[in-house]
Amino acid sequence: MRYLIAFLAFAGIVVASLALQVHYSTGAEPCSINAQWDCGIVNHSPFAVMYHVPVAVIGIAGYLLIGLLGFFRKRYLLLLTVFAGFCFALRLTFIEQFALEVWCLYCVISQGIIALLLLISVGWFTAAYVGLKRGRRAA
Image (cartoon, rainbow, N blue to C red):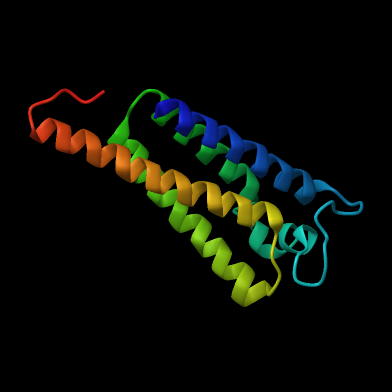
């Protein structure tokens, strides 16, 4: 399970890095599909920065932390971190839908990755907790 979490966290780092590249680019955006799907609009909006830090950098750091917590089997901290990341990403999704009214392909993929990580971490934590309640050591 920890390798799956590390793999998904790595995938999240890649996607967040692509979004960061869009944030700093001035040329044509690779994911400018139509009026509803444009990463450039999203990543150049005022919502793409928090306290002078690009949101994509926060995503990279979050996915790195998730990968490390998962790899070292820190299930409770992993669950809390993934839940916080999911809530943060969900907030950004609502901003895309209701404030910007345009979607970023990288952001949607990242939302899918963090949602999958949440499901996996809940299952992994629950399985370990049930195993401890039954007197078995968690793997």
